[in-house]
Amino acid sequence: MPAAAAGRAVLDIHWHLVRRTWSIREAGRVVGYVSALALRDVRFVVSAAGVARIRRRGQREVVAYARGALTESRPVTDSAQRVHFNPYVAAAFLLPDGTPIAAAAFVAFLSDGSCRAVPIPSEGPPCVSWPPSPC
Image 1 (tube, one colour):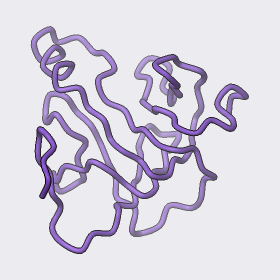
Image 2 (cartoon, one colour; image 1 turned 135 degrees about the vertical axis):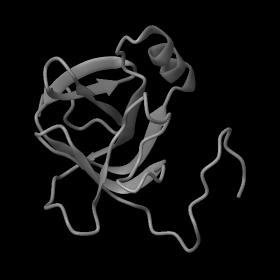
Image 3 (tube, helix red, strand yellow; image 1 turned 180 degrees about the vertical axis):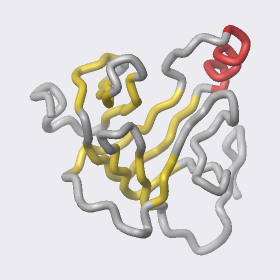
Image 4 (cartoon, helix red, strand yellow; image 1 turned 30 degrees about the vertical axis):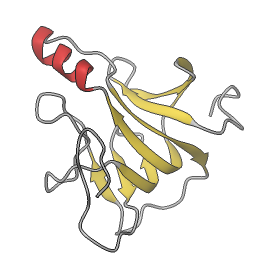
């Protein structure tokens, strides 16, 4: 892990399509690249305007990322689900069954470009709405 990222509280992580590695961004600035890492208390962020721009232009750009606190990596458990983002499919991060995911307790970003999330336990069905509203 780059020295610049060590000890930072909140980081934004996205997959760099050209470098084929994870970019670490802090306060809007890329501070390093790593092959794998883990975050806790993660929120998945997607720019709706950015997704619309990608669809209109057909050009790639960073419009989605995971924001959370850096933590030690641990083995990926069975409760961790693969999470992916494709702006041509949906304007949200999705689980394998197509369900949108907005947050996770823990996310492992793997060297193959995939990420696995342990969802936040909930007592009822997930509340997914935009713009955000109380459920």
